[in-house]
Length: 500
Image (cartoon, rainbow, N blue to C red; front, side, top):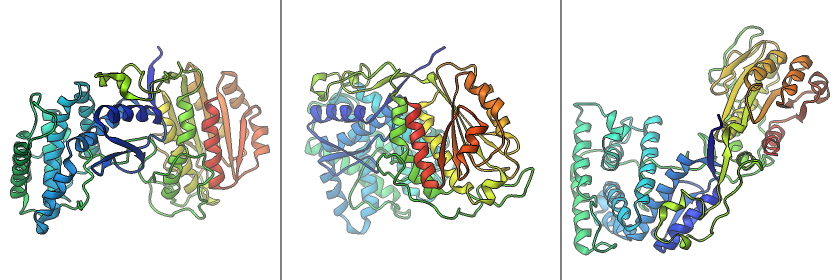
């Protein structure tokens, strides 16, 4: 059975931003960092790859959230509230921010059509999930935690995971319920007579912020400095909002890997890399700096993978949201506002094999190889229906993430390719096996069987003789790389090549 997936590139976000700009009379810019506003313009992180529909809807929800702060002219009011008491600026900023987050979102749901409610909910659900999975409720910033929980309770109710995991009977839990009671009172439950707020309504929001300040003033001030409010849906940040910002990654623009700095010696440390059967191996950890540079560098080639020519094709859309009329929901349902791709996700299945034999350690290659292979895997993951990672030395081992554990044995390419064949042979669509190795063990039979089954075999000859590998795996595409920077560039080329 074919599973259809929709992937959204930067063009989709630009089209949606045009919709908001036209309907609300605001400015939208695309940059790096967390979603934010300065009061006149909203800034959204560029989609540096292709993201799934769920992530795209959450990003659109954050865009609506930021647009609400601009449309209701909330930033000047927020700054005035902060400046009213110089001795408690951080607390006042956090409390008024929480009030405006809830008040502006629920009012914007009536200014725009009901689709805005769906988008805002998607953004809040993602923030709720991110806060839980990242362990951000940990007691380090009690003011932020209380307000974040209260916001999510006001927006998601019992559906909030943060709410569901609150400890019972704790003093901070009681404060969260009280803060929720304040924020519940600033929601807009029916269509307002006028879009913009009256002076009386602003006074009501100010009193709500005062109530929060009084409730939390005995706690340490929030860690987030708030001289310039950035708003943003609670918990939203650059990581995960748009593809390419993985843990440890910077937010550089897309490239082909050529600008990745070479890393000299590997970083020594504990990253779960142990010693298995065979020769003893040092304990090297992944080069996280290199990994962080690679994720955005691989984004553009991976975008091509999501938009390969056999997909259903782009739905060419309007560049202006004015064509929408009053139907904001069409901005993400019929494709007529922006370009999007309807691809069959099942058509790309990929197995990535990483050599963790003793020579990869003794030659000082493993830290960089781990970083590059994992970055490639993380770049491919959103566009592949099936992705499997294996490390191998004397035998292959399946991994959720590459970590080099158990490395140090011989180089058994033959069995690694057999595993890839078993996984890919019966799958439909494009099937690719990529192997990163410095080994020279013969693998003619397994490689021939793999390619006979229609699987594309790409071999990265890392710091070794490519001619020998070509002889050992005849018919495979062999790419030669002597350094980590070259390997990064070659993997970027592989990503682009798979799209063709």
